[in-house]
Image (cartoon, rainbow, N blue to C red; front, side, top):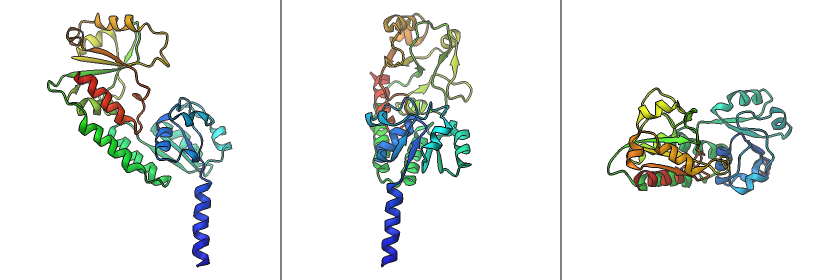
Length: 269
C-alpha cells in the first residue's frame, strides 16, 4: 500500500512540475484550450490568444527561437511544428523532451490536438475536435460551386508579389468543405506567389482577402479594394471580392472551427 501511495505521489509531483514551452502561436492556443496553460513557462512572439498567453516570457519568433533562453527555462517539454525541426533536434541533444506537430491541413490539426493532449495528459481534445467536425458539417455549402482565391494580406500596390493559399493547406480544405474549388490549380505548393499577370490569368470567380488591421494598419482599405476590382477577373465582374479581418484566420489551431464557419459564410453570401 505504501508503495502505491509513493508512486501516485511521484506522478502528482511530476505533473505539478511540468514546464512546457510552445514555439508557435497555434500551439500556444491549443495548449490553453486543453486547459494546460498553467503549465506553460514561455511561448513565441505573436502568441496573443488567449490573453493569459500574453503574460508569458517570449523565447523569440516562431521561426527563430533563442536556444539559450529555452534551455535556461529548464522545460520538461518543448512543442514545435515542422519548421522547428532544427531547433527541436538541438534541444534533444540537451536531453530536453520535444514534440513536433503538423498543422497544415484540417486533418493534421485534429490529429495534432489529440497527439498533444495525450502528451500533456489532457482529456479535453475530443470536444475541440468535435467542434471542428461540427463546423464542417454545419457550414453553408455553395449552391453554385465556383473557384475561390484566398489572398494573404491587403496591399494597395498589386504589382508586387501576392501570396495566396495553395494546395495541402487548411484554407484549401475549407474552400472544398464549403462546396467550392481552389482557383489555384498549378503545382503542389502551400503558398504560391503570384504576379499581377498571374492573377489575371488565374481568373478566379471569387477573391477573399485576409486582412489584419493589427499588422497592416497603414493600408488604405478602400483604395486597395478598388485596385483589386480594377483587375479584369470574373471576381470583379461578379462583385465577389471581399476583405475579411478576424484575428483567428491565419492560426491553424482548434479555432480553425471559427475560420471554417466565417469563410464558408463569405463564400456563400
